Image (cartoon, rainbow, N blue to C red; front, side):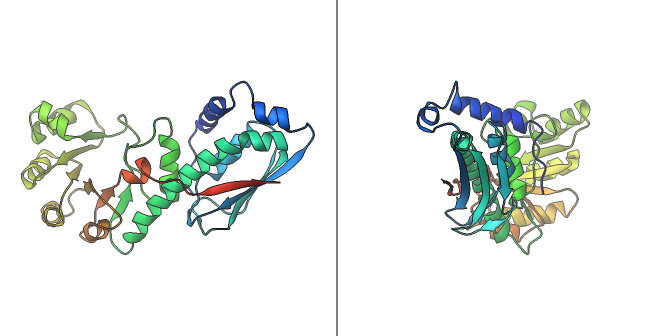
Length: 275
């Protein structure tokens, strides 16, 4: 399983502060003290679960509860499956409900979207990657969910790898010059985005460590794979859907980065039934 981010508690505390503020006025005014409750997380749709440890922390940071996980993150579930259970003071269960569900349904949606792409590409030599198109403040958790769904991580941010995009190329004066300048100023891996075979050959000649082919059609991908001939990893990005990605993946080996698995993943329907 992927590792949870080191700042998990900080992220969950921020979400709780946003939702609870100075206090849960509804629960405090309606629920008498000393009442215990059991909440069962139930899948209402088919998908891949991710974020159970995150949901648990939402309750742990509010009070003393008992948590029982029935499945692990990365598990595919069907409607009606009980994925986890939380038990303890009713006030704690009810106050933490929405934050726990917000994390769990969103991250499960990311894992589900990722698994759809991964499954479609099964049997090829290509892999599905995430991108930096993430919700601000949730990137580390969304990357966790991508891994739970079977995807592969791209660079975490602007700091851990060089990715020379088209705007960098324009300002720097071309692909070879952009790579030359990057090589002179950093020891990090250098990837460059190209749109044409001419740019691709320029990237190879300039010593790029990895090449990103932006918004290509299948014919251009074929020619790019032949031109690279395994010398460096070849990535493709832009406009990939579940319906079209298989054709591209079969041309691999390729790294296929898909922004929609994070920026457009619909939440997986999961409810918390409290008694």
